Length: 616
Image 1 (cartoon, one colour):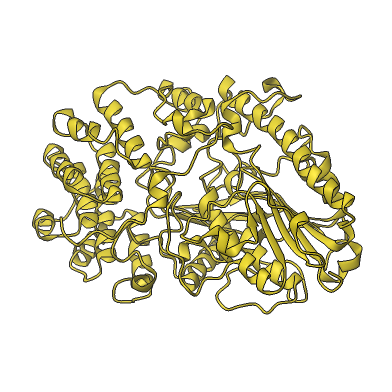
Image 2 (spheres, helix red, strand yellow; image 1 turned 90 degrees about the vertical axis):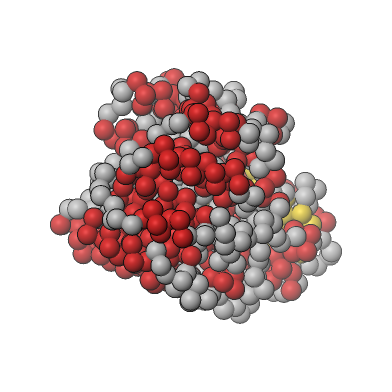
């Protein structure tokens, strides 16, 4: 142990920087505040995805989940390519005893037993062989989103909290935020016990401590969304005096430059003085190769049963967001989110028409681009993307995001369960010409009628991903009330890929004869065997005019489906079609919550679906 320090990671779930160390006067977090006093606080640390499974994939592999097909979606099962490494496996090769207590949820087919010495509730550094350095992870679930679903005794009352300006002041909103504050106090005590054990075992002087959360808060527009409330995480690193040469920062330092959780893997390697393998997307925060970032990158893809595609880049002061599906609002019903009174209250206020413009924005179609000055507008409610005073800064952030997406070969443009959604196919430029696809997707998101001929021409492209985005371009035009080119019905009849047919049919449904195109999508829903094709068909039906006589029976037929997200999406749509939906309805299957109120794994995430054939 004399030549290499131990590493202790204490991790909280779904926890934004609502800590005393980050200036929150309502928070009770004495243990983490002391850790910050003795260590280094990263004020602009970001996760790579605002939800647990893709974020944990990036922490584990040191690569953004968007670089590995399917890993970017919430609750999926990516096939980990042979080129991808994991930090516990690499640290074990270097002689470290690596333990994980206890959450895995890595969104890929890795077997935890193969990469950890111990992974489970009893995993602990105390079980290591004598003389071995350790890397120990302890994950606290206390602040998980589900803490807002039930009473959390504590000192903070609903009337004490200060709500963000972008949500309405409702009893449910205040109750949920107060519950999270009280859960944070409990979490601080639980993580404090690990720090006490470290001291009691005489290991504090030989152990570098990391504290972080996997992503942000549970309130609306936080977890699952690309704003600071969902992406900004607490990150504190304490390096004992004996190993002070590993950090450029003195105790008590605050670092304002961005950091990313994808930097953890290379930081662990740097602590152990190991070579950096090729392919990692992070930069070490410690060691001789430590270097400040200018930007941190993040993404949003399918969240639960709802599809989206957005990317974000955060600099020290600004956040830029690019929305590739601006024809959908952020405020889409997700059954698990709506277990919280905060979401129920929010939608009720929206339907009642009492929200101000900043609060109502969540329920409107998105802007293609967003740009926020977080120093003057910390709640990110003033979109500066069209302000000429910021043009140079916006261009810099745009260029940085483009460069990043090309560098990691962002696979988020591939429809889920497409035949192209494999590591090999995503590297085939004939199947997945990324630069061309990015240009087409950005043109689609721009919703300009002048691009209609471009979209029509790309419907004959050999790549199904190009055809998919050409169809989406036409969908975004028709959703905005713009005219579609002639001849699309013939294109539809000749197209064999359902992931091109669904957006094309929805586009035609918005443009006219919605009844016919609802019938066409319902036929795809009924005939498809792949649950994600069905989910995409349900998504289209959700936004088209309702025709219960056509689709209700086929939607209700999925009520008992084994796929959780398919069942939830169908139940929601069925209630919309039969007129029984209310924001307070509980659609999530409560039997799937564990004793602590947290969601168990989706069955669909443990089954590797085979790509669908190119046929309708």
